Image (cartoon, rainbow, N blue to C red; front, side, top):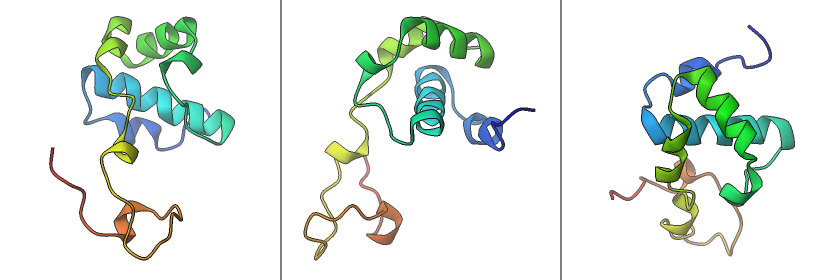
Length: 95
């Protein structure tokens, strides 16, 4: 296997839009050191390529929620805007 390391294990339990979106986020982060700001940063050709590699129809990307947890989870108490990993701040909210 190439530079993907544990990537197949990370996406193994995901299906459809979540599998495709998560894989794209993971690859984007691996390549650029940050997450994309939205769908507009991902070329259609890249989505089609990744979708073929993981066995998901490329049109599933339309159902992926690009907003992520950052818009649904309040900042940690006492952090004054600092970016702290969520696992240090308590449980994730239920949808």
